[in-house]
Image 1 (tube, rainbow, N blue to C red):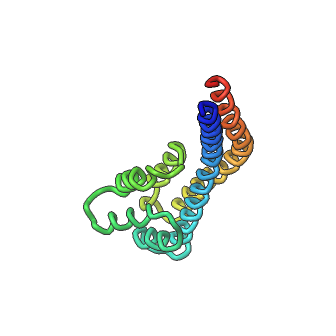
Image 2 (image 1 turned 60 degrees about the vertical axis):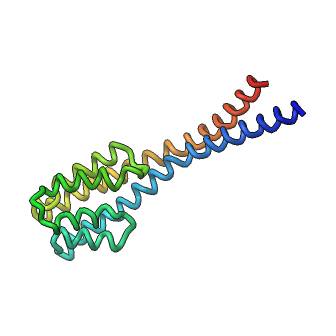
Image 3 (image 1 turned 90 degrees about the vertical axis):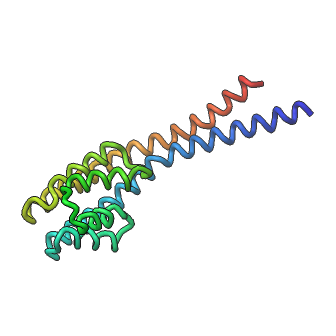
Length: 172
């Protein structure tokens, strides 16, 4: 009976550590997905400002209607309240609220924050140029993450399995 518990415990340890390795291997892929969705939203915002010539609150609302990033709607709603807050302050607060459960890293949020400093204060061409810089950052980061992600996926999965086996051997 004692050996059955050891076998069941060993299997559970191996499976759980393998699952942890799999979860860690997917984390960078989820960050890539979040960055891709953010890029789509930013490009829609650029089109709304540059081609549709919409005011910023309306452009932000239109972005929300066409993608899954609710951040833009919350910024637009706060701007429309006309509470006297500066756009940059609203932008930063909403970044903190809307992206705290996302897979975006601090550097990604800092780049998004820098983008918020330039919105609404310059003419269309300068805003478009700054938005393009934000898109270039996202493109570079996605390319970098794809290279790193492929290596790390195998590493995390292998380490998860090996770690489970190591704990099992030590425990027995």
